[in-house]
Picture (cartoon, rainbow, N blue to C red):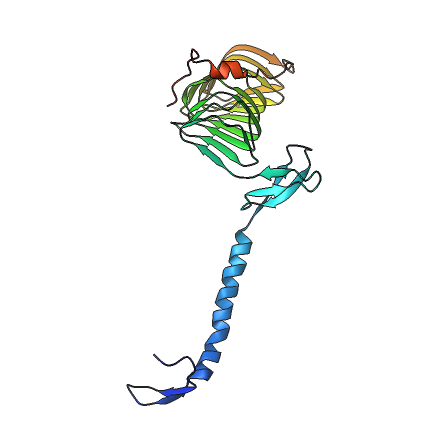
Length: 243
């Protein structure tokens, strides 16, 4: 190994003399090109998404890697973090990220506002989701659910004790509910829905099942069936076992 200030040296094996500085200059462009390529690759893979302020409903585009933002219209703080609930959790959540209730999670928050939700465990409280709520569990959802799109995943066997209010719904598992949809309700070949549906329309694929009352082009206009703090604290209320 040569000194960092060395200008020339010779090969200890064959005795040939060569210029260290010229060799360094010859290699430097390749190094710069490699670093430039790394930075351009990093920025090329960065994506953006559109979020909405909880206070004034103004929209803005943010980096997908951002953890928070400030509304440019009303200066409100916007949390962009994802939350994964793996045990009992009772604090309110307000984020434009995702909320994931794991199989052993128990979400007892009175108010959950999020962009997307994934329910695999116990959930009661009041969920307001501006994107898609994914449900995959065997048991009951005691909480109030209001979401743009409700997706019951394959393998589920779930009962909603309070009517979910949705923009649209996709049923790929088994569900019992009173669904109030602004748009379409779709039941796939693996889906089964039992209950009452208010919707703009319904589509049942071959192999899918629907049993209950159907009201096309009508909505059951009512305020969301929210859970009170008294109900949340009531130890006599039993919730379905998540699977």
